[in-house]
Image 1 (cartoon, rainbow, N blue to C red):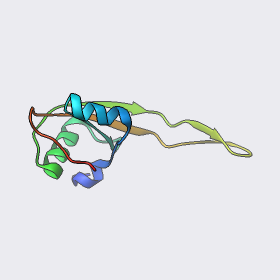
Image 2: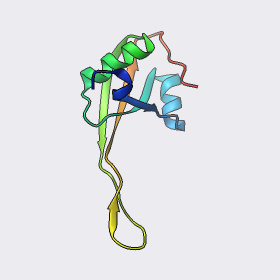
Image 3: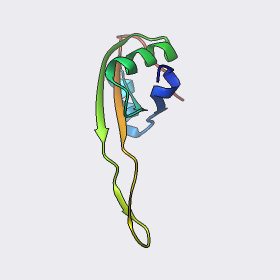
Length: 93
């Protein structure tokens, strides 16, 4: 899991994450559940060539879902909130 594309899966483009990017210079990514903060920081710096100041992570457990029978489970996932250096931006769109 040394490649940045293995660590960073997608960018979150919700209304809340867009406002965070505009006002607080924070960007939200969906990352691999096995990745730690140092790996996430290095992956963002290599992919976008920007300076990362801080990384916050949130782990989410998969929800139980039922569809006509036994209970299934959605996969767990991890979200990373990355703060960039003042004056730097990432164009996600």
